[in-house]
Image 1 (cartoon, helix red, strand yellow):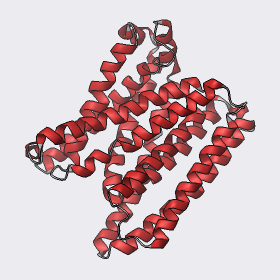
Image 2: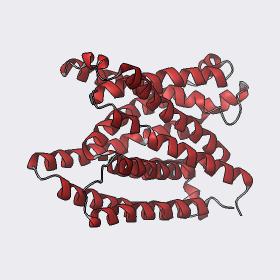
Image 3: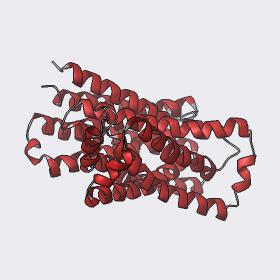
Image 4: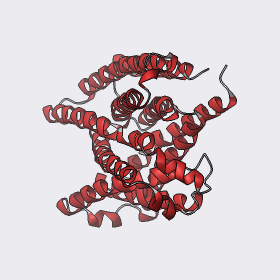
Length: 339
């Protein structure tokens, strides 16, 4: 049976996935804003404001933690953050083209596999053929099967709903964007796995085990903010959409945009807490569970907001078959962590 820490860790990771899978939902009700408007507010709140507030609140002497860290660790975490930021911007563009449900599934499925297997192969090659490693590999393979079903669902949905050729070409470009978003988005977990020196220094500084990873996350997402900020400003200038911030209902839209940042970074913090409870392989085993729950939550919101309305029965069957396979993948990966 799994120990109490493992059960607790997996539960926290599941809640983290639910939060992150819901972060883009507010965009659906901000119809007067363009993508760059809502994403700009998300970046300010979720990648700068809340991370630094939480970091200072939970990590004592956080500036000294960074001053005492090696330059290589700081560089690695910042670089992974910058590349992750590119993935985050592509993420937003991808879900705007193919839909929240399918976009989350494709992007996070790729991110899950890429973000778990590479750290395992580099840091714990001896675990690849052990129970945990084999379960992760098997779970990832099952997850790929789920992504195939979801891809078929998306293709069937587009055939049902999109008749103009332009819509289909836009969907094809959306799939390409989603692929690269998945690759770059895995860098978020790389920063957690390869930036462990910062977490250890935060522990020495007096941070709790549950909150020590905030020293990593804050630096990572700050690096990611750079890419997102520059791209949003570019689009706001190009499309002349600065004025859109005054459109719609500002008293509703601004809090909704800020809530995106709260949900997203709240999921990151909880993932760090859960991964820490899972032990030395927390960032490897917890990551695919986190990503899969993220996908399932996004699929739920996609249904709520009518992304599958009018789709054929075949498209819906493919969609829910993909969800079922992803749940099975979670079970396989989780079982590998039972010891």
